Image (tube, rainbow, N blue to C red; front, top):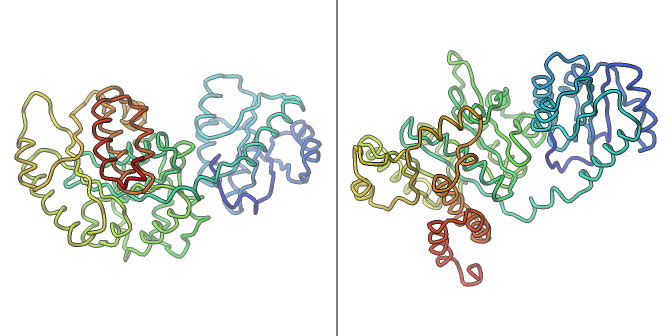
Length: 424
């Protein structure tokens, strides 16, 4: 909801949906003070807001009354599905619970006012919302070229989806880029699930009606995980095949280039067969494998496919779920000899970290610390370095934050490959 949006100037400046006359009487004069129409204060609360915004554009500032909501958090999530990014959402209600307040803020609203609230409280909240709207939040998109990376698992279960979620989170939280995670496993995708989100119907709607895909569709369809990360995922019924010629995927990629500074594609390997164009615009392909005989065979095949079909795409080879203390089906040396290239990033098998991330609904990179966090940061560094001329600078910031000797060594190696001006 509260994400930058270039269309903000074309919307209504303010709309409110309230449950009672007393709240409306407080709102209307303050709205007039700001030059907003008092007629934009509507009765009906959150339910009416969801119905109205599902068929009309969202305002710059939206006030919603949660007083009649039995489950405010779920209802706010329903509002998020129809509310466009860039809208500043202010909620009000009669429940005085700090946990609810924190959960509502985490879900993307700007502020929560406890009823009955004063005129001064309302003025302060509106003033703060207007400062955010007028701030330079959307300028970065014009300063940073778009990064597109495709994460491809050579076999099911090697952890590609887990890695794509972490990479998308790092590009947003650490590299400070507005990032889209596009999970293209239509029936069994876990992109939204890994972030404790409901996937919505955006992706299935796009596939069924490619003509609908435009900037506004992207704003409505993306599910917001945090200020800098949005997800487009699906859980289509397994008895519902979705037939497409790939047009929808191409259009989604194009619109995401305009709406975000980075896109991470969680790309199932079987899509390489039918939709080879998916990798053509990717700056980086992150190939994820584990150290098994079957994965080694399929890594060779995927690398050969990328070399033939997407020679312009940089390849980062990731060995995931590497067990400690032996127990390898194939050694790292034999794996590298077989695929005829070095592994760029190694991630150790860490069932405890994976379980903790799943329970918290957070990417592994967000909760990892110390040595466990280093490979995730290293991967993000490499994606930035390969994809953009200024990537080396972004990678340097990440490495400094990580305070890791191994990361610094890797970074120096990457910077040495850059032109002299970039390395300086």
